[in-house]
Length: 177
Image (cartoon, rainbow, N blue to C red):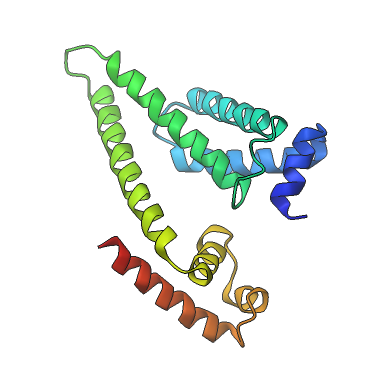
């Protein structure tokens, strides 16, 4: 049973000790990522709403098909909620010049640009071979070092894994163009 499956089971059995470390770790990452986008109270509300959505999805069995770790899934929910919140702020702004609101509008545009770039990256990533996807996920998403990647993915040594990761990144960059 992998970490995501254990976490889904913790949700389904309401095992607080299994959920709490996940909740706190992802919350800290979320607050660091989106600091400055919204005020702290709004960010707390967004995170709580996203976590409840994840929890409900786990109870309904909707997370069984999720590939990868649940922290990325939860952060994706957060990203969409933050974008929605920023959109609401922009719609309710006054017509007179307000530097704070203007800054929020620019941030919203940046989020839209990031969304398009993420879609392109996701599409290019899916076109990679399975081995490249695994090594890039392990390094960039899971944060594994080359020694662990070489061990887990049966490369002869860390240097071989590093060379393979480099080739995969070059292929991904080529796909992005």
